[in-house]
Length: 37
Image (cartoon, rainbow, N blue to C red):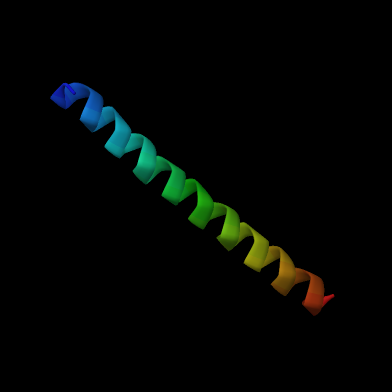
């Protein structure tokens, strides 16, 4: 496997993790705002 291919896979893995964290944060915020109403 070429180093470039490996790098792309790393970036994709990190990107997926970040997206999941953002989604969880948004979900948490929505839960907080709904309980405040």
